[in-house]
Amino acid sequence: MKNNNPKGIILILLGMLVFSVQDSIMKYIYSFVSLYEVYLIRTLVSFIIILLFLKITKKPIVFRTQYPILTFCRVVLFFFGFSSFYISLTVLPLVTATALFFVTPFLITIFAKFFLKEQIGPRRWLAVIIGFIGVYVILNPNFDNFDYMSLTPILCALCYSLSMIIIKITSEKDSVYTQTFTFYIGAIIISVIFYFTFGDGQYNTIDHPASQFIFRAWFTNLENSILLMIITGCTASVAFLLLFSAYRIASPAVVSPFEYSILIWSSLSGWFFFNEIPDLKTIIGIILIVCGGIYIFIREKAQDQSIATEKPLR
Image 1: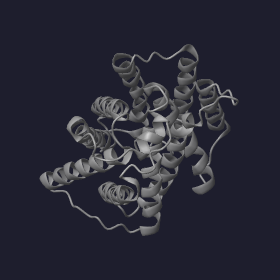
Image 2 (image 1 turned 135 degrees about the horizontal axis):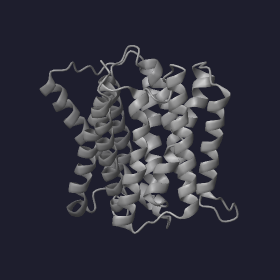
Image 3 (image 1 turned 60 degrees about the horizontal axis):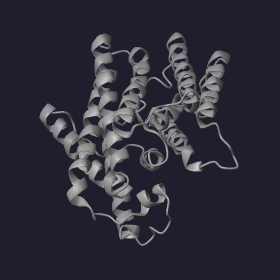
Image 4 (image 1 turned 180 degrees about the horizontal axis):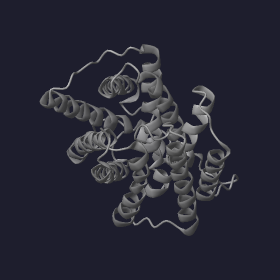
């Protein structure tokens, strides 16, 4: 029964802290590893940890999905969505990339209207507009000299939002662990395909940090990176278990706004490790995004809906 809200809030706060650690490591290592090299190691480690957790807790392990086509689409969306987020860390401050990802509740609201035929009132549409104004304030685009890689967190949010709409459907028959395992297996397969396609670094010809992160040769700096890559897998699985536990024991409408605490952790981490201090327009944009997102959570609770609040955003 979902009635332990204080404990759920603590678990969410801890989960967001752990996620910020993972993101900080990704930002630190992008200059000397390949993105999908990290993705492969991270996913393998997470897969093993979650599998051991289920074995120890004697929970059923089911790999087979009841929705193969939708699951394939979800895996691809999720894989390339978070690839986009990690790429964004090469060009954006940590807190900026994180804040832009939080357009997710606005996109989920839009997609739920058109794909799930959910009823969205004018006040939630206003919250969506406010959120996108926040995005514009943060990006402050000068289209004559704009790095379009800055849009990658929004691409991540777009892919993630679509995958959440799919999960809304597949959750009727597939457990959360089945959906997690299908992603892990899919991510491992895609990463291995990428290794044989461009893992030798032959396409690493463009002098841009994002391009180098994607196409750098694999396993050329293992002595400095293997431990950090393993830690990203550990943090990803621990954060997942913390968030899943929070949503299991507490009301999603209560705990979901506390996912925004990652903006605090990311700000502190960005300042401490990367000397990143957000300027005034970034702070204003973050406030607009957070206010719009929290208002959507409040309205969903009032309307007894669970579009953007039912699942963790990370």
